[in-house]
Image (tube, rainbow, N blue to C red):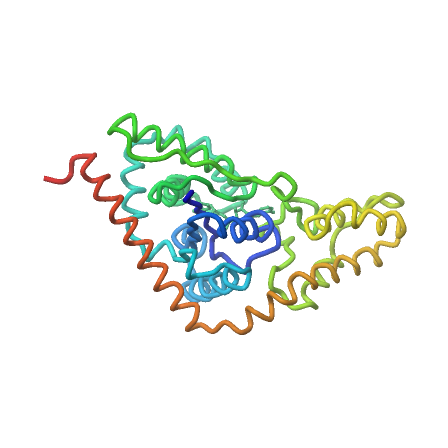
Length: 311
Ligand code: TYM
């Protein structure tokens, strides 16, 4: 069975960009793959320094995973910090790659340009992500467009290790679905927590309605592209085209239709999410952490042997 791996940072509540770009494809593919879904808490630590928010966000993301339809008996759901082999392997990789290689990271440059502290963890971020993926001999990684370069880092890191110490790691492939690779936010830029332009995945109907009503529309007389670009994640273009034709510049009617279409998808998932307790979420993480650790520690036996630290 082919292996799937993906991760999301617990840096706040998930938005519909996370859902369509990564979570939904992962849920669908996990039916046919040996899947692992990770909560990237050590990645979030590069920017989040509030332990209370960290705890809340972790619990929240597990519930989001389950509500989105992941089956924890089939798919391993775990958090990064429960498997120390990730940080161990990341260190080994850091001793192989150059700082010049890491300086090419778009995500690092963007984050620093946005005013985030240029801490060493943020700089080494792609290498920890390479460790996440490579530890489990992953074949495919469903992600949004903004993670494409990180997959290149993972492949190059695998190749560098294999060339230096002998064949050990598989080179993984990204799975980016073009139509949902970059879900735009309410201002037309990529939907992102740091741009404050999100539609929350599990917000209340009112929160979702407020976000949709705030979508910037400036193409008077023509189709409101920013609304359409979000809408087509929920329904096929042919299905919504007549509405946009009919309502032309009645943006309010179009936005109300979008709110209804979001609610039709999210409503049942939200109800499911409300029925998941903190204890349920904890149990899932415990079981998943154990399974992940078993696989990771086995792989690390081979890695330690290869680099010559076993005697
Ligand atoms: P993160 O937490 O920023 O985002 C999680 C996933 O959501 C996708 N995404 C989007 N897709 C479409 N449109 C958008 N507007 C949008 N915004 C976010 C992201 O592409 C991502 O797939 N580095 C990762 C977390 C991570 C990871 C991993 C992922 C850590 N280790 C190993 C895969 C494999 C991140 O920051 O994702």
